[in-house]
Every structure is written in structure tokens, then in C-alpha cells.
Amino acid sequence: MPHVQNWTTQEFALRKLQIGQKSTSNINPNQNLNSTPQKTKFRDLPVQKENIGINKIRNYESELPSIKKLCKNKKYPAVLKLLEELKHTEPNNADICAKIANIYLITNEYQKAVFECKNALRYDPNNWLALKVFAEVFIEKKEYNKVIITLSESLARSTKKPIYKYWNLARAYMELEDYSKALKYLNEAIDVTDKEIDNNHMKNSLLSGLYADRGKTYSKKNRNDEAIKDYERALKLNWKNFNTYKRLGITYFKRAMYGNSTQEKKRFRNNLDEPESHDDLKKSVENLKIAQEHCGDLGEILKIKGTAYVYLKEYNNAINDLEKYIERFPNDEEASQILNGCRFILNNGLKTS
Image 1 (cartoon, rainbow, N blue to C red):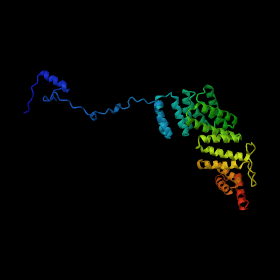
Image 2: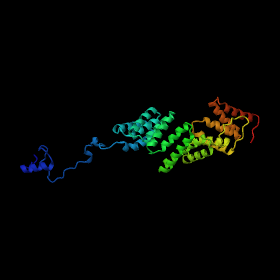
Image 3: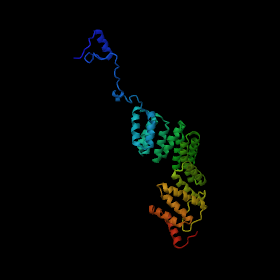
Image 4: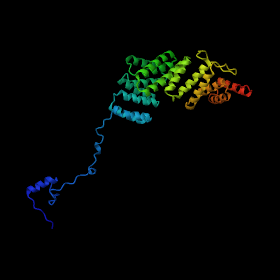
């Protein structure tokens, strides 16, 4: 039978304190008083999952990196879900409403975009993104006077971030064929961008688009020399703007045929007038080839490139382009006449070097 130590009342009370027990039922009276209690291992501690992240603050500013990343990856449903959640916690935040409007613009949901723009402008009448989206929606809907009225009133109230206000005013006036006012606002936008934007990547991106639009406006006014300079500036800043190659190629063709004249377009016949510049025709073909590789709109490219080949006396290339064009646009009598002229020259051995 094991030996049991006899305890006094004081010794027993002391023992209880040392081994942390509230009852005597689990006390081993033979335990060495000098022994070190076993330490509890970390892995044995219970994990309190309910406390993880309980103090994390979610708001618009803290979620901006996530919003930008989702937008960059074109995950628009996920962006909208996140923004709508933030909108519930910050219902009067104009920036959230403007961001939602911008996503709806990208996904071509114009009615929803306008609704969110109005919400944003109710909280902040000068919110630049809401004004930008509002203008671009109504440009797409061809309601140019709404754009002009809204942005003109905004400029009168505030000059905060005016680049997109000037730019969209210019776009609206271009569509209304008021090219002088379009040039005025494009010049303003270019000047502000050059002076106020410090980030070189952003500055180059904006200036590339602005120079391309100003080049288009110059071209509409038959100021082809200035148009070509602006298109080339735009491509120097962003060589991937492939639509600008198309515009540049067309403008080189116009200058080759008409210089900077405002005369009516010549009608093409079998006996073609000699162009003013063969070099410009070659540059036209070079740029249109690049545009053809990357742009979906081949109609105008094929016709102008085919016609340029005619003047360069490259009749086989001309026939190849014009036949493709006429497959798409069989009712274009002008193109048919040019094509028949090329065939006549080749069939009758009239080709000259």
C-alpha cells in the first residue's frame, strides 16, 4: 500500500495555492513541492478565429488599390460589387458614385451611368470623373448640346481638373462641325496637360490622344501640314495608337492629291490627274498598311490605299485592295470606276513604269 503523507491544515491550503486547484479531489499529496509545472505548448492553445480582422477598417480609401487592380484586369462585375458594398457604408461619397458610373460607361450601360453621375454631382457638383463620364455618355448618344451646356457651367463654377472638360467640349464641337471652337478647347487642354501633369506616363498618354484629336480637327479644316505634324507627335508619344496611323495615312493621301486646298474632291476617272506628291502617296500607303494590320475598320483603308497604288502605278496591288473593298461595298460607283480603269490598263498593256 503506497505511503500517504500526513498533512496539516495549513500545509494543505498552501498546496492548493501552489498547484492552482479549486478542489482537493485532483490533488496528489505526494507531488514534489519543488517540481516545475509543465508549460502549456503554443499549439495546444485554442484559436480564436472570431477575433481575426475584427478591427479592420474597410472604406473607399483603403479599398482603392483593390478597385484599381480589378479595373486593370477588367473584372467589372467584381468592381461593381465592391463599390456597391462601399456605397452602403458611405452613401454620400461622390467618388464612389462616379466610379460606379465609369464602370457602367465602360460596359455600355448608359442609363445606369447617367443615374450614378447625377448622384455624384448631387454630392459634389464639380466631381471631375462624374462630369467626364456624363459628357462621354451624351457624346455617345449624340446629344452634344447637353455636353456643351453642362461642361460650360462647370467651368464657370470651378477650374478643378479642367483637362477632360476642355477635351470633351472639343469633341462635342467637332461633332457639330464647329472646328474653330474645337481647336480652341483642344489647345486649352494641351496647354493644361503640359503644365499641370507631373506623371510622365499619364502626360504622354493624354497628350497623344489630344494631338491625335487636334490633328483630326486640322484635317477637317484642310490644314493638312498641321494635321500631319500633330499625328506624328501623337505616334511619337504612343506608337500603339493604331487608329492614328489610319488618320495619318488618309491625310498624307489628301495632301498628295490636293495640298492644303479646300477644293472639292476630284472624281476619279480612267484618265487620272497627276498627284502633287508621290512621296506623300508612299507615306500614305506605309501608314495605311500598319493601320490595316491592327484596325477593324478596313473599308476606307482599302479604298484609299488602293487608289494610292493606282497613282503609284502599282496596278496589281491596286486591284487587290479595290476588289476586297467592293466585296464589302458593291454600290460604290467611284471605286468601281477606279478598279475598271486598272483592269483596262493591264489588259491593254498600257502599264508604264
